[in-house]
Structure formats: C-alpha cells, structure tokens
Length: 105
Image 1 (cartoon, rainbow, N blue to C red):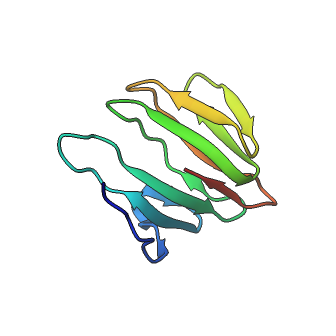
Image 2: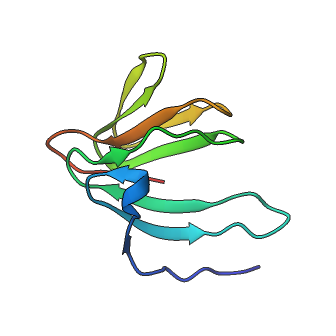
C-alpha cells in the first residue's frame, strides 16, 4: 500500500486552459496503471480548451457549478456530486460557470 501526500497547488499551463485554473495532483500514472487523478479548480468563467482523451475521461464535480460541453452542441450543467463520462475521442471542454468557481476531480 502506498500513501500520497498532497502536492502544492500549481497554476495550470496556459496552453490547455482559458482563464485561471489551479491543479493539485492526487495520483500520477504508474505502470501498469493508466490512472491519473487531480483536483482541478476553475475560477469563474475559466475552462479547458477543446480536447479529447484516448481512453475517455470521468469528471466528478466537488464544489461550485460548471459546464461540460461536447462538439455536437451538448452542454451539461454540473453541480457537486455530478459525474460526467466523456467517451474515448470525444472532443469536449469543461469549466466553471460565469460567476462562480468549480472544482472537479
């Protein structure tokens, strides 16, 4: 069994986001696992740029309110406790609402 001590909060790289986003890594990929987990905090109006994941992505909203959107025009509001799955290859973005923060894992 391994324990992971919390990492310092870091501002996310600008190339992947619009607005100010902060990341706390929880679990980094370690072979043979492919799991990566982070707490991501979006300031009001901040979001990811359009992107996709080869193996899909599960988002779990922990605080605030936000949106998850896909290229087909679907926009889903998320609030604490909501989980959204984006299938492999689906282009999407996710982030905070215009006037509130949102945290996800």
